Image (cartoon, rainbow, N blue to C red; front, side):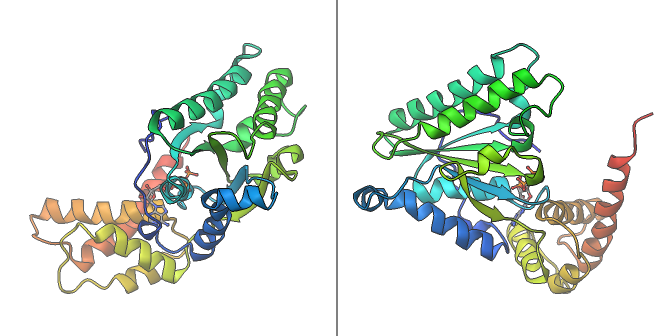
Length: 275
Ligand code: ATP
């Protein structure tokens, strides 16, 4: 899956409407983000700024999409980095990368004339694991300490407000220091979608695809218990490929049904150990 690593901070145009299901997560995230939107009121009332939001949940459930939607919602520039990008064997490299990321976020927001920046840190458990738990622990510790320093340094009266959105599927591995007040003090659970959520996600991903009259997405949603949003997206894509191969004008129900198996089998093949 292509994702611009710590790439140029543009304002992504991901609307919350393009994220299917996840109603609770969206609501909680928006409530937290209103602290950024109403920054002047927050400052006036002397409320601590919101610095970090942690999205937890299985892979492919839309955490990256939610972080991008958070940037659109708050009119912030968006920078993304993955925990593993900070892992280096040379001491101090990870820490200086963290410092650079925050500096770049401020510069980009200023350059774009924006009052806020969202830094998305995927795989947070890699960089934010318990200190002392890693073999080359000194390097990890320095990197994590730098993240804590940067988060503690976020000020309400700064010209650019930074909000760190972290994502992990292993919150249990995080160093408790990250979860203390003033750091990631909002936790938003992003679960696998339920039936309604799966239907909503399927509907989003067939928007641009021609569908035959026999298509019953609800039936597909019922048959895909346990699928993530990413798997449902891949299912609609597989169905379109099957239709193309047959020279069909539109996707029919049987293409979708066959695609369910394709996605399940595809995952099984992917998981086989390489010889
Ligand atoms: P990871 O932990 O693996 O990074 P993630 O939770 O960040 O996964 P995303 O990268 O946001 O997941 O999702 C991958 C793709 O799956 C999205 O680009 C989108 O096409 C699809 N997708 C996932 N969840 C949803 C959703 N709730 N609604 C619509 N599409 C979704």
